[in-house]
Length: 614
Image (cartoon, rainbow, N blue to C red):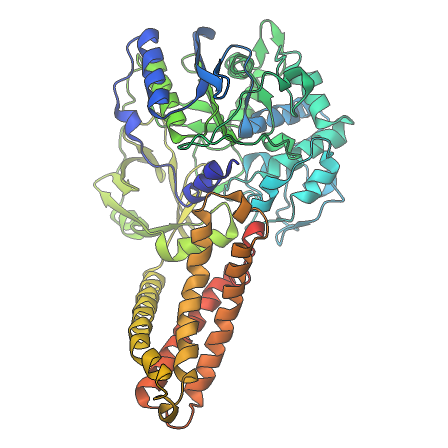
């Protein structure tokens, strides 16, 4: 399945985008050199097949196919080969919404509860900050990403009216319109809004208004007979095991199938500011709005770029590129365009390896090879700001709520200052004024430091970190150290009392229970944390996506752990006859630390966690 890319995305959501060595490479000097370089990256990564489109001066200058579409038949990738676009579908969905907005039939500020009155959305801030249509497309509704089990939902003929209920529940984790956290749930609801307003099925509306007029003859949202014989096989990275095609009912978020040349019509349309081949599909103002986020605190702090309407800006280079990536069922695709230089690219592959995006970065470096690197004029940072802003930060916008437990104990990012520069996540960010920061070599600012009533944040257009108070940080580190020390001590102590228990020597010294239950409490509370993390590393939707023996076992351990802690605490308070001081102290320490650990995990949903619903 697509689980490898999914898990990678979940884990990557614990931080901002990190710097990549590809940005430091010299760009290819010519189209021929670019072709060779991309081919070498794909070959080294054992990508079976791919298709590349390169656009300069708003026209296609290179169309290249690599490798095979089917490893068993060795059928080559050709111009007619259909790939899956994955989350690039969100770009199309957003354009569909904006077409209705231009007609005056929709407003981005409309409440979702009004547009979809039968849909249940839990939002504690609805009175002042309801979930609006714009929040669905900009990922600012505060929704969790869809659960692992949702990735196993199939149904070519399942209508969106039913699908939106299958992908629930929908709950805002924070005030809508403040922070960005990627969620596949939002665009699915936006697609249903298109249906209710247009009176057509989502896929019919998109074909009539956008893909068919654009000449995207291969564009289908389900596996139709017209493309069935042209769809590439897809393969798992590494062992190249074939992946299975899944027709998902959450079509607006990730089901679009099409050729690379048809997908290239999208960046050409955006470069044309809504006009392509003399036909206007939307206005330049709409194109600008699609690229410009409005619904988060980073924008209000002055950041110009981030995740907007199915479109994300990437400032890591000499010019800003807009676009989207996508991954599904072993396929990976990416498109990006830069209006400033009239350039774009599309790269689609049939194996979801990270190296595909490395190849895309080579294309980008080629396209901006003649652009002069931006000059950044750093602005001074006051001593007061340096003092208040420096410290340890943690991500506050994980894609799933339960990941906050991991963030709270293990994800620490130091922020310090050197003259007028912020040192954060291994990069040097220059202050350009008003708390905005631009990484050295980047095209535009991409971080803002914000002071709120809840504390200091480092916020980007795709997520946010909070400054952790020193007392909280010290308490968490101390608790973690104590817990680990206690667990190691419990294991060492077990080496002594377990043999004694088998030899019957503990009956006069408090018995086995005084030692077993505290040991079980500390070990099982640790297992309650490590179990879900181990499952995430399996890359197996058979385990993550539906109830399994392993999944139920992890749930059972998390439920038993606090019970063991309660029993251990009771034994420590009212010890059995003959209990010595060492055993009582052991029982008390294990019970208290296990109890605290279970309370912490419970607050983040890990006690009784059903991983398939996470």
